[in-house]
Length: 334
Image (cartoon, rainbow, N blue to C red):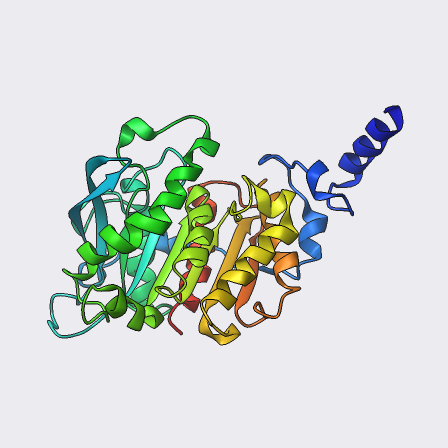
């Protein structure tokens, strides 16, 4: 027993990324493994330009609206809302269709965490990022939807691991059955109708991304809704499809399940794109780096469809998310 304790302690000191059986590997969200990242050939993001923190000129400002819809969850009907960002010029051309990004918050956050509130001039940093990046033609004009995975605020807990069933329910049920029909039945996307078939046919024009538990949800969406989305942007969070934080604790099993999702849906490697990212000082690297390394062992994932980027010095916060998104948004719908 003493020898086992010494061995485990030594492994933790030198970095728990060495060969260690999955059942003994239990990284925490506060641990960082730079050396593990060096094995995944990750790139490094550039920082968001400082002038993006300022409000864009009026003619370059998008508009934020609120949409309501209802969902059933465990036998109860809940009334929910989401914010919808419409890029500048949306109202001017009533026939133009737009690509769409669904963007999900992290634990304890809300529909307001990315876009702030309705209108054109509210002070949301992320809304300003969208205005500037679209105006600079670094990204295409897109509709951005920011929902919440909480049925209502009574579901918010201090322990983020309790959110996982809500994340999975959102990906499997609420997103395709309730939210997407409500949004794409109202706004001009490429979906000709909001039937499952209509949404599937327009998947090339749809992306899903999220931060922290929103990133966990992004991996759930990849696994369960690949027929509806082509682009994925998980920021600061790995897949929990096998177990909580399983991207770090059971990376091979996690990668296998994600690869199986591609095969099950009869997709090829060029049918989707994943742009994963994390802050350089963010403990969730311990979840993401081992997962990405294992995913790259499968033919379903290539250098072209799976990227992993590092926001040097970034923490597990919205400042780093802005840097990650600034880079990731430029690759959507290309």
